[in-house]
Length: 140
Image (cartoon, rainbow, N blue to C red; front, side, top):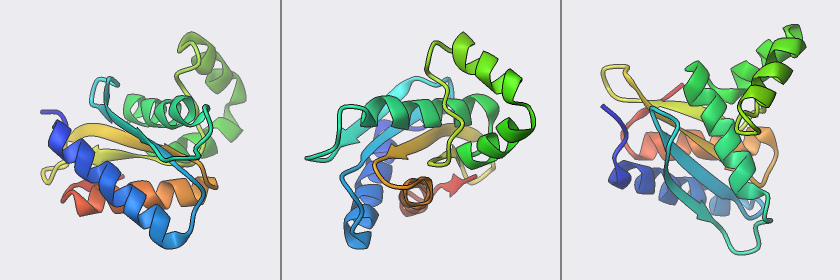
């Protein structure tokens, strides 16, 4: 099973609402399916041109490795050569920086990932988690 377009859009809407409520800078949010394919993306007015690439790369790494990008960032500190090699192999689609979470269904199956870019890593991660929760799914 993979994330539906309806679920992806609910995640984005709720994440953007949380961002606005928190007073964060303009965000870009990417939702990927379990295979790392783009399901939905939104960029707020005023967001820079880098937001798509960064949000997608955070989410791509998370779904590919099955853990949040925060965990990947921590792992990268202990094995930087592996993560540099992985980023090169992925042709820039992999970014182990805080701001993306995996998305699981109620049974714990990995169905996708969501990444954000525009704020600090903690802000990006917080809005992703809020979006996943609002969609009735589980973040990890």
